Image (cartoon, rainbow, N blue to C red; front, side, top):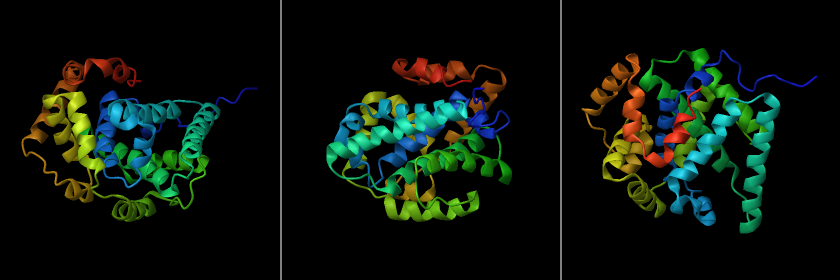
Amino acid sequence: MNDIRLFVPQESVVRKIWGNGDMVMLIFAGSAAEFTLNKAVDWLYFTGKLPSDPLGRLFSTVGYAHRIIFATEAEANKAIDVITAIHTSVEDQRGTTIPDWAYRDVLYMLIHYSVNAFELLERKLSPSEKEDIYDVFYRMGTRMKLKDLPATYDQWLADRIVHMKNDLTYSQYTPDLFLQYKKHLGWARYTILLQVQALLLPPHCKRLLKMNSNDLFPVFIDFYRWLKRLSLHKILRSAILPSRYKQQIAGLDV
């Protein structure tokens, strides 16, 4: 008999988060900013994919996570193994190994922005819901054979701070990537992206980027919530998103 056990149970809050295109976009926005600060971002420059198509590269990362979350356990494990194999191939090309902490950093970003996206658009998460979120990504990391992953959400919070202090810096790649975002998005969308990022990023990241949030932008979020209650929010989302990615984003709504 085939194994049809789901990687993420139907009742999990993770499905609510990652089945909502708006929240996935927020996860994408926060990760896009933090990516620019990571000391291992040169690995993505090595392949040439990040500077030539930064949005597509990040969509790919988020898209993989989305597929894993809505897969069966067997399908999810297979997808995680494919990701591991792709990275191993890049390591072979470069002749060196991607540091274990770099993998953890990406995993930690997905956890952090999953929590922040939901709380920005919906409500505060309970401790058990945060533990649920952490468990899903912990299992992803365990399948990737990542070492020294914290056992609980609270332990992860402490390790997250350590990782940010050790692994993030404002480098030559930081302004270049933001320039690429601006080039691919255009001025208006780029301005919105910066304001969204300022609402999502942890204080340490905002200090490194010298990023300040606009006091008026939370009013925009309230307006968005009002549109959502009227089921009109997708009209605004469609207006904001580049046409190139609209189909991809629509596919994230589950």
